[in-house]
Length: 278
Length: 310
Image 1 (spheres, chains in turn green, brown):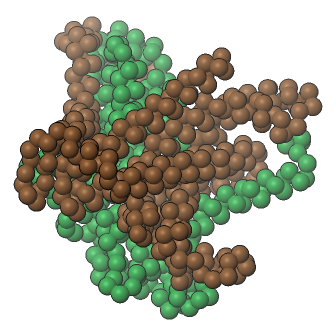
Image 2: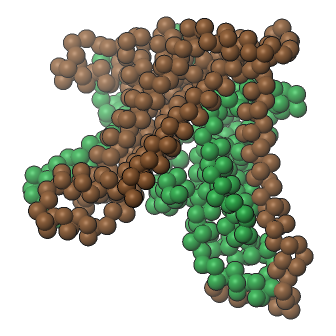
Image 3: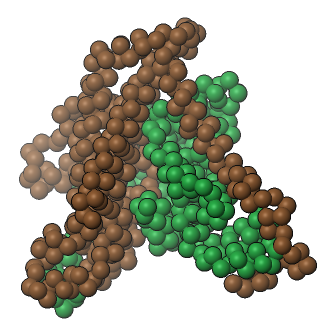
């Protein structure tokens, strides 16, 4: 379609692309730059994107004063456990739905999908009461169990979509060779689905890493609180420490962005499969 | 295929389905997922429905059946309706803005240009970022004193004094909508892009041969074919926007003067600040019902559109 374009259209497209780039990257770039600037520079009234003088003071504050690493550790534990559980439970379900002639499987898939749209605030009250009576407040367990259910619909959908693209002849061949049902999943389907498992794992990880509402309700001290709760509570008595917040934001977001950029192609494919295709 | 050949257990013929019938295997493999969703999603909804019919409070330690009294109270509760309207307004405004701007972005990304991969990659940044971080980031961007947005607008001559964006009841909701639109539009665009790419190029070429201009091909070919994708993406976006919590709770906490209170933040406060679990459950159940109605209306419209297209 390139040849049909007038110079004016070309300029418009590049301008539009530039706008999208600034839109997507600009705010975080500013946040990133903020994290290296002195409070004095930030409130001087003449902001500059290049930090001058450059300082690591905010990172020092974030880690030493606010103990950011402890939130990071809690988030890592909860998110990694959630990821593996989600992949395990989700792949079992997706495999059954895709390969084992389940009756009404599209009905089941629709139910699973609609569950993911339930307002989470309607779940948090009753779950809080259950967690209280089981003594699970301020535990990793409560968060992991909840996040498993939050991540499961998306993981199941995306994996189901991927399993459906694997040719049925493989099943036949395996059946001929006497492979059992779990053997088919474990030795044949899963090894063939590694790229999809990585993507769905990443999605489950991001869901757990970013979740705020349940973490806020179920945890009350730094031993178990996750990053979003930690950052939400980042305030000083007399002023908002924007620099410290920016430093903490950078620490928890940059690794995520790197991961996402690395797997971007798979993420977009996986999500459009799960979210849009019926 | 080689995997199938190498793994096959030689000398263990016809074990498939022998030890357990396939249907039992299916049940067994689906059980963990069912247990998880049933206990963390379905049980709380039912339990919440029951709680909403009681006067449960963690302070007074009461939990007696009280019929519909919570709902009667809800009906006359100005705070609830205030939050209800805010939520509807937020949902409508952000969904429409995100769909329209997202469509514009998708149309640009549909064209071939240098650096397209970079732009597409950058678009995942707002989506991947924790919402709490987005909130804090917009808190700094739109800060009333030293915010960069005020600085830029002031120096561009668009405003003559600093605006107290989320600190003033007039502009607070707008700031939250802007933050949400920033975070979700690029992702919406990527979803719509995959929809656009399924429109066969031959159709557009044919239209061009017939002398159709860019606008005409968009309006009569791309848009109608994209409609199902657009509506489904819009539905998911609307249902998600309706639940907004993190952005509001962290940026304004529902204030100033309740001007950004939404159903989720209101429920949270009733539940965890006043500890009235009965009344709080009534608020969240009312929210669940409203969301169900939105989904239903959307789906009916969607089905009608698809029928008409056929």
